[in-house]
Amino acid sequence: MTPDPKIANEALHLAMEWGEQFMKPTQPRLKKKHPRLTKKQLDAYDALAREAMSLGHRYCEDHVDDCDPEQLATAVHNKYPWVNGDNLSRIYSQGMYYAHK
Image (cartoon, rainbow, N blue to C red; front, side):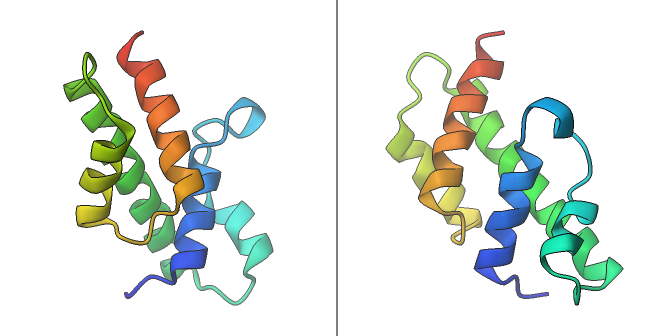
């Protein structure tokens, strides 16, 4: 599947939610926004979002003492070029939060 960048970013945003939706599947929420997506597509977007999020969080953990947001963006964009600036910022802040726990 070639991901639609808009939908992929929405899935990533949903995957990184805090509070009541923390760590819950994105598929039901994404289905409400995009009712034409199939279960297979929803699952693929969820997996893709979680892969991008995990890569960014691992980068922060691996570079906890010198994690630069620009270098993180480059690392994420090397594999997931569709990730937008808002999601990169969230990946960075969450990744650094987890890295310092």
